[in-house]
Length: 324
Image (cartoon, rainbow, N blue to C red; front, side):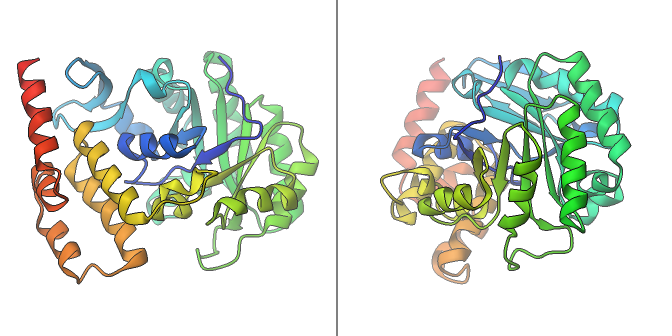
């Protein structure tokens, strides 16, 4: 079933942040499509799919370590996008086949500028390898019924970006997300919305604009400037996931507490829960204050439940699930 990528608000893929509790949080506030964090194909191929009857989830579990690499549920199946880090068409296909029945779409990361991705030929390293991009996307399109998309960054010149976008369009992908920064740009550098507009004008598939969206009003601003079909937000959502609400942002303290409750409910990994909480807090406050220090000392979800006065809720969940 094809996802509708027109006039949608999307949660961007964010490493260690795009877990199921955060995706569910963003969707509750109004996100139409939610991306999970990028997961490397090698990692996916070490996993097996398991149905978790206690939580009502589908888990991708790494064999040997038993760690949860990806968790989803039927409620988000029609909106969750699984992003793969890859540099090989065959591995990409095998990885996608592991998850495609449980997600709405599969996305290939072609924009991550981190050294880990680039050194492995993944992420932004693909931008200089259009033939490999073509092979990866066409291999997925030929062998899967699941919608395929990809996310890129701007290239050295607007014309280079347009040429790559046109080549990507010819592979038959359902949509193309464009981050309005180049590989060398830093987050503090302004996103080049005008160069996203060049891509929009050059292709007929939906283009998802990404970069410098921090308020609900920015969704419309970037659409007007770029002509993009839809808009994707990363940091703006991390700092306050209620950015997706047309009613306006809620106090970030309330959003933070709801994230804690969802992390408890979905039994999220405590390390990624702490990471997301700290990323929220550092934007508004300081980790050197008592709350930040208490998070650092927390070793379990029970510790976080006590910190945020959700211990009764936590104990109730444990009791109900132990009887199950």
